[in-house]
Length: 493
Ligand SMILES: [Zn+2]
Image 1 (spheres, rainbow, N blue to C red):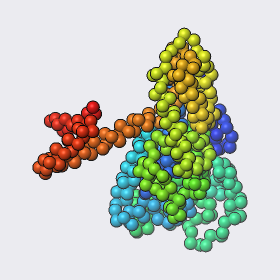
Image 2 (cartoon, helix red, strand yellow):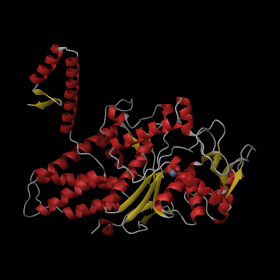
Image 3 (cartoon, rainbow, N blue to C red):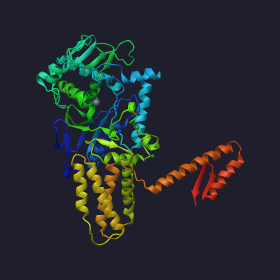
Image 4 (cartoon, rainbow, N blue to C red):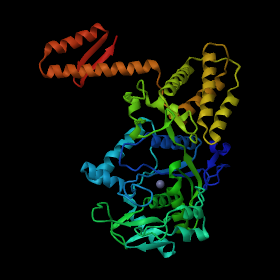
């Protein structure tokens, strides 16, 4: 039987502001859309946390046997410097500063994004569409919204008429913002803006001459508004009404609020059943900001080269640390907290590797079945990874007691213990099995490979004495080099 049939998940829905029992539109299938990065700089840690939370959620759905279509977009056009539809396109600006083509910027930072996520062992989404690949779809939606009278044209740009929409619908349904209050509190337009009301947002912007990222449309040569791409791509791949939409909580307003309004007008149905939002992170209790130096880039963890870190950390340790907090809580990074997590991570991995050393008995003295149930209950309660991890440590304690033969376990129960630990540690949390001793081996082979490379250089330069010295000194340490036709290999004696 598929596990999802016996596991009812409760999710915190930002739309209803409450925990609800999750039921997918089509049985056994889930459509999930997550707002991806705007690729104009290296991916920052807050983004990694958001995508890691949804990676964990995706992994749990897959574990339960759901067929999941997971769409996470790449924003490669249309994201302006501020939310008021003003300023330069972020990608075009970076391209201008670095004297590159915008698509070179897009390529560079898309590669960086994928590399960083691969290092953290993320599963790739099912579809990763780009905004520039869906200009036609976006223009079609604008035409439809114009036809329905919910948008207007000003000098070649098209704006969504928020006040008109709010007459029959609720603009603010997700963010809880009250449009009347915001009208009251905003300054009167200075006559510079083309918008009827400051609350309106751009669906299409006419490009000025220096704007190089532009496409033809019925209204002007220009580019789509940022919010529109997500409406276009989510409904194209997941349908007019789909199960889950996720993102960082900073996207709730205006981005997600605008998505709801556009899609609602376009398809006449609420686009999303469950809205999930991840919380932000801090460093040493303070907001992360490049300007104050209170800042860590994801790759800094692996080199340890950052004033806030005392050493380098494995990607799995950072991943473990992040998942020790609930995705809806603020996560505070500090070196001390990472060191504590690292200790816990190795303890857990050691227990996982001790599973093979357990001798089975005829009877069991530990209750593996109710322990397994608690692991599922934690995940079913809005993906509560900190509680799951606490339960996995309880499992680790069982393993160690069994290894020392202070408790007993039957063959069947050992299989339950083993499969539950493996499923949650590797498939759901996405950790990689590393122990302190295998790290030593990895490092050793890295150093030996480096020396093999140096010896090859020496031989190419006919520096026989250096080449022999490297070989002999390694041999004295018990490492034997063997030269073959495919290069040099080594063995440790
Ligand atoms: Zn989005």
